[in-house]
Image (cartoon, rainbow, N blue to C red; front, side, top):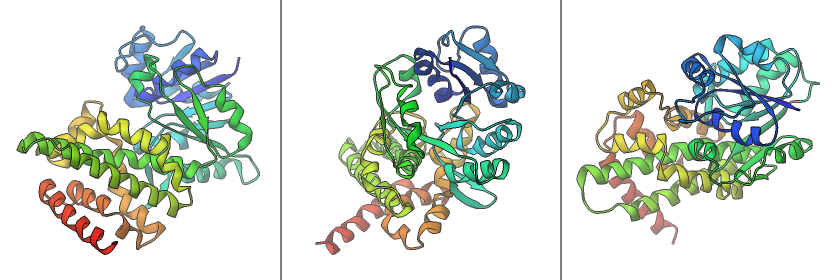
Amino acid sequence: MKKIAVLGAGYMGSAITFPLADNGYGINLWGTWLDDEIIKSCINGYHPKLKKKMPENVKFFYSSDLEKAIADMDMIFIGVTSNGFLNVFKKMIDCAKRNYIFFKLTKGLVNDSGRIKRIAQAAEEIFRKKFGESEEFNWTVIGGPVKAGELSNKIPTASIYAPNNESVADLCYSFSTDYYPITITDDPIGVEISSAFKNVYSIMIGICDGLFTKYGQGNYHNFNAFLFNQGMLEIAEMVEVAGGRRETAFDLAGIGDFYVASLSGRNRRYGDEVGKGGEPGETFKRMFDMGEVAEGYMALEISLDWVNSLDKKLIEKLPLLAVLHGIIFGGKDPKKSLDRFVLQMIERFRKNH
């Protein structure tokens, strides 16, 4: 039996153990220090976030037992939050006695000593410091419309895996089930960027919903659809400029995941609270303290620096991202900002025709 360590005992790290267990893998689920109470509850037979018993072939490890959790494993799935990724990955590499095949569930960007990077970039640099340039770095980015609660309840969805080495593709298929079918792409950059920014733009969908609740001026469904379309165009633009394929944004990792994140989820809920009048920073902290991490907030905070590192003129093609950043981090009024955005887009439409 091949064995897998899953790092991160929150929603997605825990949920992925269900299809892995159904495929006969032995699993070590390790929790960060934030997850110690979750691990304790799981040992006693119940996952407090997923609200159910975990699979039989899952063993549980506290934050202090990272080396023990990965010792005899063949593969490692990483499902910690983006703001905790670098710390966890560095600790894992430090205590690793050999190389592993890595699978990334984490969605977002990271600030690595002042440089904003895709997670895959930062991870490979950390890996190379330990193992050198000659060692093979097998890294797979995972995306798609997969909500943790539904996955653990085995409600059908589809996921997309993007390995950087085609020899890992068959291994990726071995995680597939009838409720968790997997498709493979050779565009890890496209999947990673789509997965990070669908969280960002779903905040704006939530803001729109919150404004409707606050002002009660009729349904905002039309406006939400307009924002969704603009968000997709901007995600595709970033994917292409970063070296991925534009069409990847219109597949499972982009439009599929963005759609489900816009219907429900922590990022949409966060945006909804801001739209109803919540102060952005305080709202994020309140949710965080309740164990609800809006990953899109953290990615948005560093997104403009990342965009400028790709192309200083790229932000001109991302007007919705600029407006959203102004609302969350620039103190701009949500309704006035969106009203101005509409006027701005009218001018763009006129210039293009």
